[in-house]
Image (cartoon, rainbow, N blue to C red):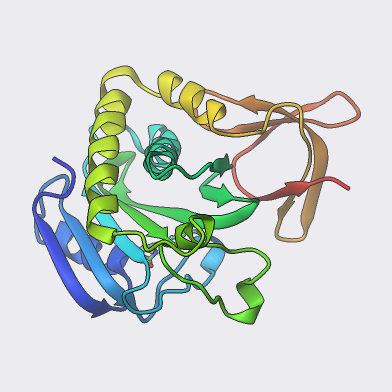
Length: 245
Ligand code: BTN
């Protein structure tokens, strides 16, 4: 189901925008847009997603889950698990970082941007945007310390984009079906096996706010649980996490 039908573009502003307008025109669930380049690729928190031509993977998928909007957040975790399994299938070790990053050697190799559209708690569609640094060898200076690629992890070996998309689509098919049939529990459990979260001392920044504490895992809705030193358990729904120093 995932990846059928598929539109392949040489370039676009953002595959998430292309998929959203296709969804509004009636694209079926599973429809996928893949681009060789993006001129306005975006990430979470309004960030730019580095999208040079042909080196990497930029794709978006139209989903129409029959659940309330409040139940959608674990979908990002399901996509993370599918990505982690796909990366592992290439023989590369990776780690999931809450809520939407895939890290290799502590640097970001992939990110997920889910954008939802609907009204009164009912979903019309969710666009799942996925960016994977497959083959970039030289990142812009601002990214060199925080980003890496699978090619780098494989000591220069080129990663085939089509094969990666095929494996990822199969993994997504499985995890999405599980999400619809069983809800968030198996997803949260699987996500935690690919992460190194529970028990870590973290600082979570949200705008100008900062929260320090020890992670106690994830709630069933994908919320991060953080215990501060005064004993309070905080449910964190958004933010940027880093190791506490
Ligand atoms: C993040 O880590 O902040 C999320 C990055 C998501 C990037 C992908 S690339 C394909 C799709 N189109 C976009 O504009 N963004 C997502």
